[in-house]
Amino acid sequence: MEFAGLRLAVEPGVFVPRQRTRLLAAEALRVLPAGGVVVELCCGVGAVGAALLAARPDIELHAADIAPVAVRCARRNLGSRASVHAGDLYGALPASLRGRVDLLVANAPYVPSEAIALMPPEARLHEPRVALDGGPDGLDVHRRIAADAPGWLVPGVGHLIIETSRVQGPRTAELASRAGLRARIVRDEDLDATAVVAVLP
Image (cartoon, one colour):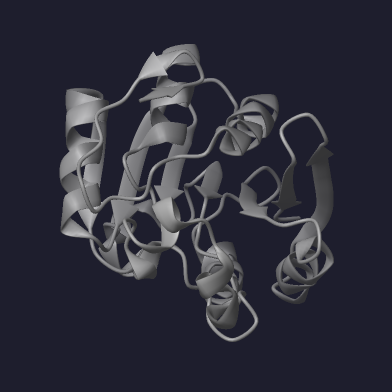
């Protein structure tokens, strides 16, 4: 498949990146310092990480996902230029990254459980539920990512960028604010994309 001008390998049973996720890559490039340390959580096939590497080959990139098929695809797409870790969110990361991450980026699941049945068949029938289901209100994974982000980010410059929806944007931003981050909502109408961009003071 194509994402941000790149050809990416996908396999059956893996979450297929949406074009709206290009907003994450664009916002990441705005805040990413030279030689920055980047972590892509819920990386899927590594689409955002691949786009960042293409634009900024100087970064140190780590990617993580809980699904074995996603980890396999991400390793193919990112190659030797990134470290791809298998596991649940921050639990997959080496402890040596604590306090030195310049950018955490995540396209985590944010569809409310009851809304899965309303999704297009190509998504709900062929993509893993773990990559879609965000719990009763769609924010279960966002809560976990936001709550633990300050322990991994560089104070003063470290950013967290999470894809969300237009409706959930204010609630995702509130989760980041409760964790001690300064959060704002970014919207791209052409892509029908929404993200929360938050910085650790």
